[in-house]
Amino acid sequence: MANESPLVNAALRHYRAPRNLAIIVIVGFVLLGIVTVASIVSSYMELSLITQVQAGEPITTEEAESNDLRQAVVGYIFVGVTILAIVAFLFWIYRISDNADILKFPGEQAKRFSPWGAVGWWFCPFLNLWRPYQVVKELWLRSEARGPRSLLMPIWWFLWIVNGLIGQIFLRNLLTGNQPETIDDLAGQNQLGIFSDGLSLLALALVVILVWLITNGQEGKWQRLAEATSAP
Image 1: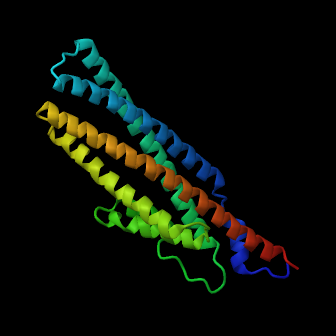
Image 2: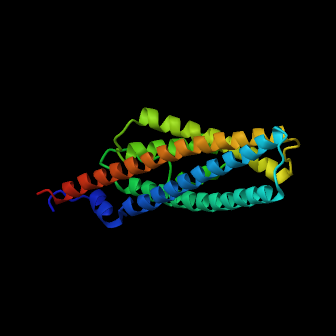
């Protein structure tokens, strides 16, 4: 191969296609979206019971127990699917970042974040409010993805942060035993949960688009390197 170089040879040897992993991530987030819709429906059903109590209309013990069981089942499924989807997403982040170190044209600057750093920043308190955004932005640029990054990424990250903060409120209340004291407080908490789930759906849709565009961009960059290698 007349145009071979150490860079291209390294890419050919070590590049690992991210498409199958991206599909797993997307399927995970789609399933999470379905569970989120189920959570919204279940919360509306609970809110209907709360409204009934607020209006002075009694509910039966069976209705209350059925509601609690339904909410618990949806909650457990939501947590389980969320963990699986996030783990798959972090594997994808590592794969894309590792590939980006390989697929580097001559003269292209080294990445700011290593593959392990690209994953680790998601777990750093306070810094995870902006560092992961920078990680994904860098992966977008290094993968030469095509799409409206200037709008897509900030909106996605805003929704991610807001929803995360609301989730922290619910988690803190759960861990401290700070439960609603009145029926009105319970209704307010329920409405906040529905609002949070709505934001989650938007964030999930945007992150699916991001995963697909970055994956396609990186595969396109790999193809250009492969063509450069095989050129006479």
